[in-house]
Image (tube, rainbow, N blue to C red; front, side, top):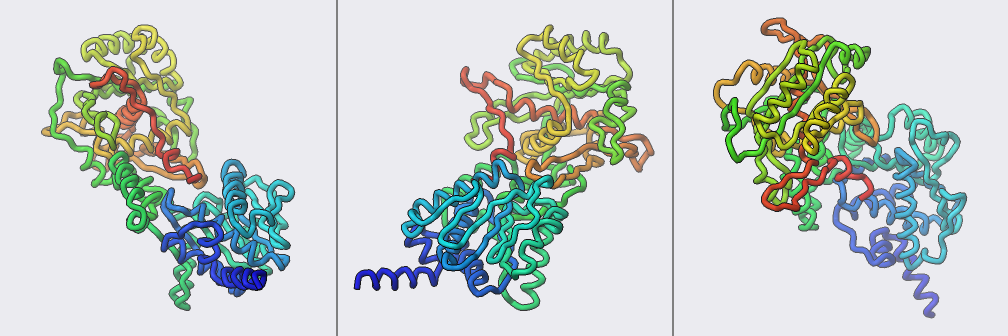
Length: 510
């Protein structure tokens, strides 16, 4: 009798994925997780072959839900030769992490803890049902796998569309398998965005729900601690920062366009004045973008016009910032505020002469830090400055990866209100800086590293006067983001500003 009762109980649980998950894993699902679990399970079990798109904000339980649904389906389908395929953009760490999560859930589930097996290092089995973990990296050879029950694409915003269409989509073509595209919002040019549009159109035609988009506000309604966490991220990066908009509020952004629209430029406006001399007792830093004809030639040749420095520019730009250490004490910002108080620009000056002038300026402003572009011809100048100003020079080398990170970091400085331009009648260089902001463009590449190319495209001219527009002053200002990771005395002798990478903070492993 007890055995029959147990069989009846198990049979009853298998009819409802939520009951199965909550009873066998002792886990209470959130309401937005319940909606996805039931819809996905019903489509798989009824062989409806629907295509779902699920957008959850970071750290809101997406990966845990995936593992729970997979465990339920493996248990339900264990009497059949059912196959689930799960594709991630990379093998390491994403596929590896997904396997670890599933194994943890299988081990803790009261029905599967002793029933599951692992085969060939990437296959998990319960009875006759299997799930295969595959990499969707461009170079991965995954042709030939078949998803008879379910095809999952995790972090679909980072998977190349061509790879999906050619190698992955055919896995469900002959089986009418259900498909789930998991991810977080990114640009409108991603695979996830394309499938989102298709799913919404299918919803419109037949009324069957296929799209599940959750934002931070809905998560916070069920998890108050999450709301506090997101509020801190918004304070640190700014609500309009692309990472905040996409990773927490599920808002798509354009994959390319103007990097500093009017709203962002307005946020950069301060109420202080330009000064030619330092105010005693206030800390300052110098930000130097080094340029020259040799460097321009070295960095040129980009057919898309996205060279790190605009070819032909022979200006070296210096920005002097007053560093407000008060925001270091802000528990959410934990970083300084930078007020631009002075700008300089040199055209065709020999670096030996420039070196002497920079030393004089560093002494005049009593600069705590000098961040200097150490790329190409700037390397020698940076080396001499480091020897002359020990412990005060932070060299920065531009390459595709470092410039991308600098762009994201500078946006966090701007969007959190920590960059301030002088008020009143701007000088000639201040006006030139504003024109560079207006003409700065960005382009975000597909992929998990979210690399951004940005700058003033080659050949850009000011429509008002036809003069060329470069980005030397803009690059100089962007170097302020390097200051975030430098040690400052502040009010606490031991206080150190820890360098932060927004992309790592929003890591997909949560």
